[in-house]
Length: 159
Ligand code: HEM
Image (cartoon, rainbow, N blue to C red; front, side, top):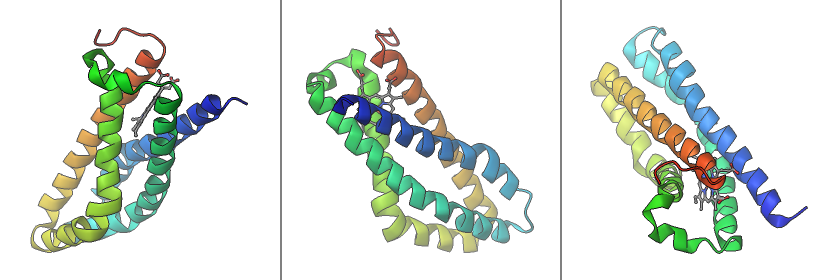
């Protein structure tokens, strides 16, 4: 099988597992967490549950990023980044960079401890921030996927 086809398959498998996980956490796990005991208990429960997803997300962001850059290289598509009509290419890389920064740098070094300290002072407010952050990431992800699918197949989103 052609290298670009394998890369495309890996790219989409990465996206499905990763963004599917974000959708599950946002639309199923977080609403369920709201029904658990006290606010402080809710944050602890959520953190335990999401730790498993963070491990999976590190792997899927890596697969998506490597396969994505391989496709840009094979298609010699670097020039697209200079054209506004390829906004979905910028959106993919930006979204990937935000998640990579969060999962590999901010979360292990700082974010986890910051959330724990904040949750001790204000558990309900901290959970509200977590919910908002997940909705923003999910909406941006869905718009990016829609733009990338349409754009990759000659669609006219934004042109
Ligand atoms: C380093 C980051 C990324 C790079 C360099 C990248 C690059 C690419 C390239 C070159 C294509 C093929 C475009 C074409 O066929 O004309 C593509 C397709 C696609 N990408 Fe990405 N991508 C990245 C991250 C993402 C992310 C984070 C998402 C999801 C939110 C995503 C979703 C998609 C989708 C849905 C397609 C369309 C595949 C199809 O319908 O055939 N990509 N990407």
